[in-house]
Image 1: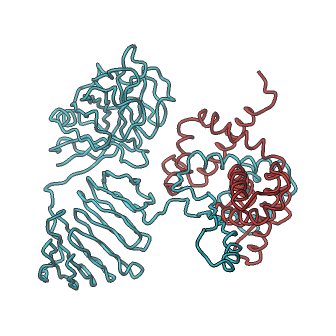
Image 2: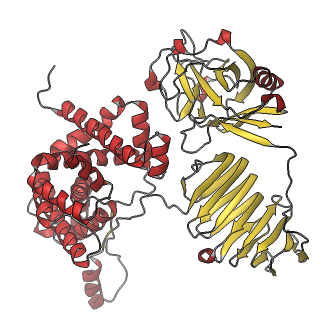
Image 3: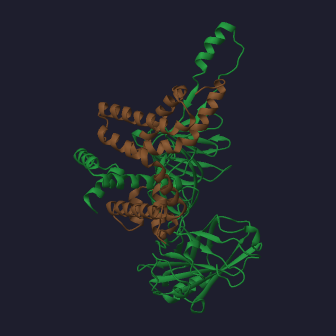
Length: 443
Length: 181
């Protein structure tokens, strides 16, 4: 990159120091070509923002408040109308960028169902997050940190407030997040600078609070409250707060699954193929599956690959392929049969597919060369949800082949009832909201 | 301009301002660049435009007049920032020079922007489009995006610069008055 271009680019990224800005300023003034280049870049940026930026509420409108007509004594009315006639408010709201309150700090083998982004590092706006598998940590902008273990459903509300519907989590609140409130079924807890564990069994059932360090207060809907210190715990139910219990150890009461389970992510190695090889009908964020009528030019299949060198397949007791159905904007739902049947095929070993590129239909593994490992069905009415394919055939295939690499192909067996029927879409690894495919194994 | 009453004035202003608001904002944005700053300037410019609306002679002159007001507000904003030494900023000479040039360029830039959205974005490769989408939706940290596309942060920004350049070249080709067959 030429130096001038480098300067433009870094100016646009707000990354110039004082000397560099001075240099950029001088060059801009001297060099008409550089200015031209600069205008072009800012112009493209406006186009891109216009196209892609999520406008939460359009804050760019100007509001004019016409003078209000009220019954006012005559003399006063004249004076008042003079003031009111300058009733214009330019409301350029600066909160056009979404209102972020937390960050998804870490995903450990996590699978999510959420309308919020679920990649580690994503910024989060208020909303509900449902952890289906694994462990995840959310860092609130106040400094409070919640580590949750699946299954767990929480509502992120603002930097110092969250609501736990069900599940097991630990809250850590440093000095900056003192006063963090965790709502639970039947009440809430206030964190007075500490860490504590909560296990909520769900609505109408009891919730256990357990202080690991420091102090918290637990509050019931009836207005009672109870302070708990280190190693103390209590239960909260619809009837109110239970008695204070001194724990023998700081272990939190959780339902632990026996044995070990791991989750292998496809790590970007997934794609869609389309029979007519017209790739503009694909979207990298989606794994698409469709069977159409006629010559089937728009038939789509999804390919998913898992690579691992550390798994001892002979030891696994259970295996499942998880994919997440996401709402599709492609085609009409009413042109589908009431039940749609899908087939999953598998190939063991190296396929030669370049996963970061588009793949021609003809270059994909042939169905005849694959092994069927299961089928599943999706009703026409369903537009999202997590699908876990757990079949004896899948387990057998994985154990038998002992391969470093497995590729799965998802096809739809049922066709549309009429042209332009719905394309089923599953989240790929780059999907902004939902998790990509994963292979779940337990020992 | 003359108005029948206050309401007539309100309506006329609102109509003209709404019609040109996006163009004024883009003009301001090219001069001050940071979105938050451009919104500050727009807010002030909108109030000045309304207060001085009586001084406008003809409706046809609204755009030219509003750009002049916006330019003045940009320079006033620059002066305030420079005085407070709050942050680094381009010199007023450079801003004035750019304002002058951009005044004459708006129509062409408008056409190019249209071409980018309608045509050129569709010609990009999948990964290029997907990177731009993720970046301008602003839902990820840049470091995450860079990693996802297998680049360092600097490398990622350079790549994005090149994609923008490509879009601009495409738009220019599309909007050339006598394009080659």
